[in-house]
Image 1 (spheres, rainbow, N blue to C red):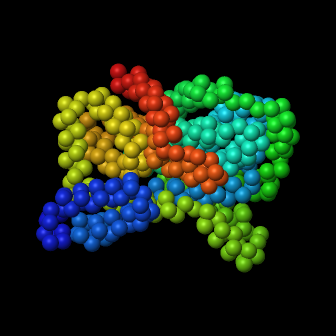
Image 2: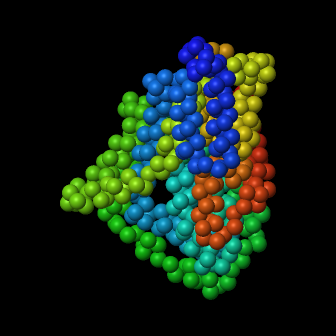
Image 3: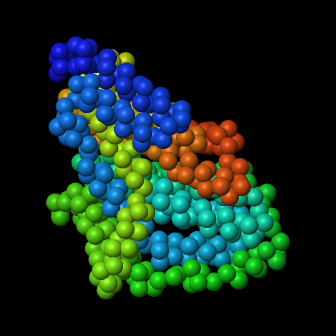
Length: 443
């Protein structure tokens, strides 16, 4: 693109850079809903002439959008069966309603669900049950909510579908569900164990409740949480099939987005085929209403904004600067991406950060022998962004989701109270990831 194609003959590099900075700045202030911000930013990228409309559409990663939407729909329908509440109550009873045991086990359940579903949906399911349990035990809910926030981001890092940054990285780099499990799950297991030890040291030993309170929780019947057994069987069958399809993705020659959307559609069919036409309309509308449309449209706008700066050449320039700064040393680049991703994701939200970093990492391919040699950089970006999202309350969507639910229920969840504990613990998990990257890929 030449400057003559841009409004008033301005340099597209400067126009796109200014729009990117303004968009990110507005997102960070949280004065406007982030969908409005990226919508304006994307629109100005097109109206200013930095991108044509066709280029803007090509800049959207529809595989990412489809994977997110499909999994949201599957989990939203499954949630109506009550299975997640069942697991939470069952887990609480498994440890005898001991506050320290509940603290640890709910964190583990959150991490596992976050790996198999996604971390935002998981905390939406777990937090209300957690608040009920802590109320019955008469213990402060904050330690439990903190543990679930942290565990959701750790668990989400372990798989392709667990955290939006991984979904985007997997789609951009052609990485499968198995690739993430084989390469990231081992280190995530270690970080979850470290988190469990840390929260026990910080809170677990100080949590106490009465015998009567524990007896009241132990009297809860988890089966009561299951409201629709047929839907439960259908949902688990579809979810299991979708996960198997993810594992067999390369053999099936299908993209994750296709698998997720088809699975969601099959579940819609199973949930509605026996209903009348009017009932089907109501239930399908209700299911689609459960999608996180704000998140989906946020991604669309963000992809277009980043496509603008990529088209104008900013990311190529930044890639060359990064190469010069690291002296072209691959190991230094990997470590730099890990730590820069962690710190910056804690500050600006890991989703927009990763959207910007993906094309930048791609630009490094020719300098390091091609795309096949970039795998350690993708793992560094994933670990840095996902783990770094734990650092502050604005680092990841799951953090803000929990804080919002907690505050609506009268539980104080302030930025600084969270950050003073979370940031050092985040740095510890990133240090573990650093050691893992070095021992497995960089020696």
